Image (cartoon, rainbow, N blue to C red; front, side, top):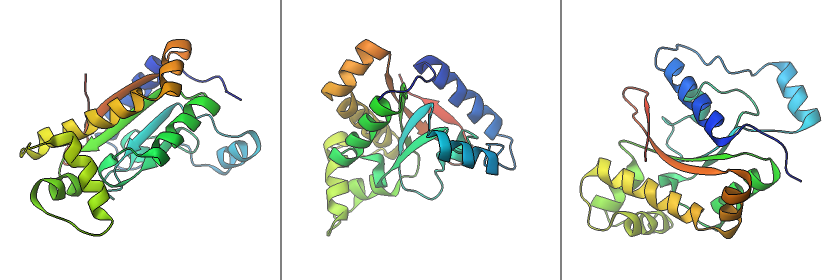
Length: 190
């Protein structure tokens, strides 16, 4: 059952405005009150944006966009790579929660991207770096590689038949962005 939510363009503007306020904030002004906790418990969630991002501890979407409880549906995995689990989570939030904006949020100084460029990891990390290598090819510039990695995840999401249908029917929008850790700014990609 799909809920009514903000349009993709209104959600994008809300993210941009939140990030602008974050640049000079010293605390998160997002609503984390007992009232909002109870309201979302009783009435469910209606996040205005889906954020697919890295597990990096410096990348905190709720802070970066000054969002509170119930506002963002966050999917985190090292290197913000997409597999069936992440894609299923995106489809769930868009299809069942009515969220109309999906943002793949990469970031500068990403350890997973750096490992894909410079290292030969083993173990389960290799699954992540192999996915990143599919995105970046022979790229050695870490910032460019981060952008290519975001673009690949955006492409994977957009290739989902369910997502394509929601783009056409419901105005769903999928875009990429890069978080600049040092400045706190988010650069939305074309």
